[in-house]
Length: 606
Image (cartoon, rainbow, N blue to C red; front, side, top):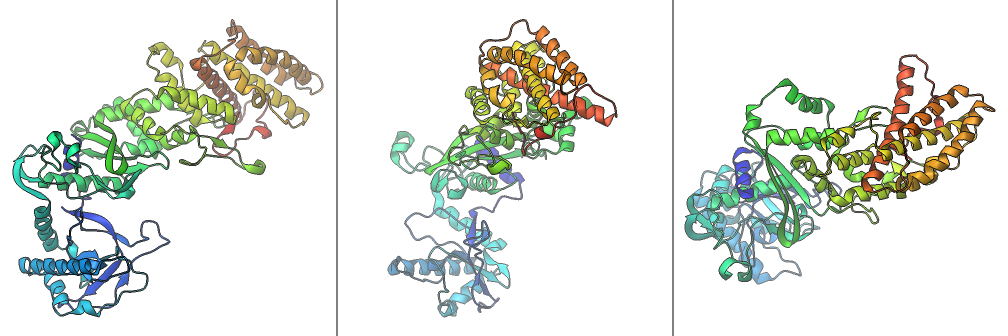
């Protein structure tokens, strides 16, 4: 089905290269006139300081997989084929054969297609103009040279595309016809797949690779190599390899993250213009609201109903393509799964008090190690693929699969995130969003338990661990308020000192915190003369302790997660109360926002 969907994409997209063409960096442009005369010196297009153009400008050029034989391409090839130049590593006899083969192919092209640029290229060789060019400084034997006739790339002409398809098809065809596994029609079959995916699009590969490859008899059914037992017609083989390479090389249809050892490509067949990766990784609030409002408005897109979302995750192993994941779902179902994804991970921001949705890549980033800034500077997440990032392998693709297929998160991810919070002392909306997502997607969770896990503070959530987290947040803010009122900066806050311990054993911390809170409250009422603030915290603590019949003395994984969720949401609720009161010019019994707990870059420390 993967190959069939790639063929469908090739048939419907204008982005796919012509048959037996591939995008390669062309370093040198050889300009000639219509009569074959040189129109100037070679043009060097290499731009060493520009990404993607170090070895020349990528262009769609004739290409087939070459083994040890001499096999020229049409109107563009290496300097050995075009000029016959030899360096110390080359074999002069072989280079002479390559140049002769390129010249012969050009003559045959001119005879078959006399009205196109072929006549000019043939005249260039016939009149001996190729002998007038000297190797420029910095040339390499692997550099590609392309002919331009009167300013137009010769290999891009319709006559070149048409003729090259017959030449390359003859080289790669098996000479037999049969039933193609992809299209189900009786057509001429391939001996081998004619194109390869460049190494740079396959993380882990050390050379280009074909999507289907049986080069040794021990790898094939009944000890047959090539495509003897995997019949694929010439047309389908060209289409799915061109489409596959086009998708992997497209910034709009593929993505990869350093250290994740995989590349993802996605596309939609059937006519729908919906891009599922847009709301997931580049969220636009208007687009998200339209997506979420779809079921309520009753809109029904006929194109969506008949369209299919496809994605493939691949890696490389030497010269083999490894398909790590394949997804194929109707577009309406993908939309519904993405709506549920937002419902499951959105979380209140502790500083703005607003519910926020986190980019998929940011969720993956937050699963790694947090690095504090030096000298009080802003911190940052460890980069993908860096040493000591402590980020689960394949986390991005695991989250993407969860989003698109509405699946639970990997079992170990919740444990990993909680451990990172304890070690880093770092809690922000992305990490809390991961925790809420993992809890809501736990397979054994009942509907009532799932609905209890709201993005904002749930005053009706009686879970002991959740209530414990809320109490811990009030205690921490109480200490900060006392310090702020006394104008005595804290070296270590209550949360910084006890948060990691409270996650695993709330009882030990909260019992001690309750005793310490008495002294904090007495100080606010007495020397600091803030009885209103003291009463505000006293009421919140009394109410929370009253709801908690017994403080948990130990915590299993779900309880640890609920503790963190309660802590985060209680902090956000108190901040939102202040913000709302200030906006309405009304008073609140809580103290104003404290300067020393202003947000850090990308979130806040606990």
